Image (cartoon, rainbow, N blue to C red; front, side, top):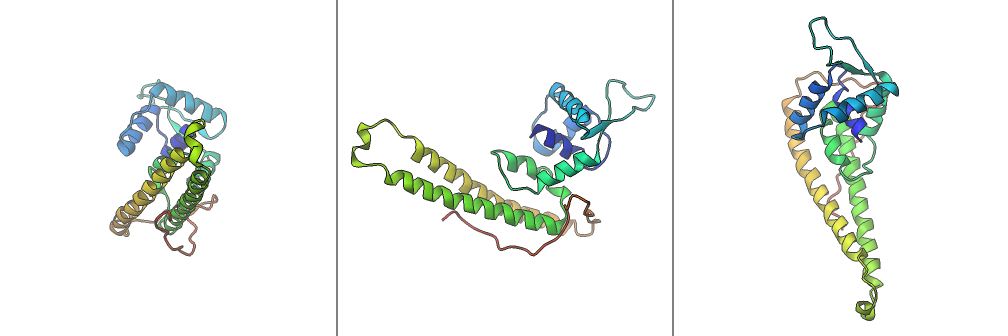
Amino acid sequence: MFRLLILGLLRDGQARHGYGLMTDYRARSGHRLSIGNLYRELARLAAQGLVQSGVNPPDADPRRIPYQITDRGRQLFDQWLVAPLNQDGELSTKIIFMDQIPNPALTRLLDRWQEDMWSRGKALVREREDALAKLTPDALTRPYNPLPALLSRRLKHVTAELEFLEEFRADLDTWVQRSRSATPVKPDASGVGQSSAKRPRQRGTR
């Protein structure tokens, strides 16, 4: 996910060096990046053709090499940004770049995330009920089974994420209203920015 984070920081097309990316990330997330890890990942991304290095102006520090995202890197990032949530912690990373998605597509994306999370919660409820049903009266004499507790923990996490998404959408709606006069982001070949019918929001996990 680290490489996608860097691609997202470069998604606007501006060429920036590692220190600028680190500063931008800290301003957006409140967290720090290791400058050594950042430059190593930039080198890997350049080798994969996802970013390209530029040339510093004559009066610039030669150690600060500017990097810019390529079309291939932009396409990879855009596909990931609108994809379903698959990993723990992925939502936090994607939220950093919500301002890069046009409003109609953003509404569709958040609807889908909530629907997917709601479905995941329902599945966890069924799994937990099945696990509890298998606990017989003599379960205390058998080896410890952590599955019900772990399923309960995952369910609470999904419930909390759903509640967060509701609050986030309310805050986002306020931001959108304040930025209506801004020029909308144009859709590109990756499909980001294409509008679709709004789906109903899902609430809860039961």
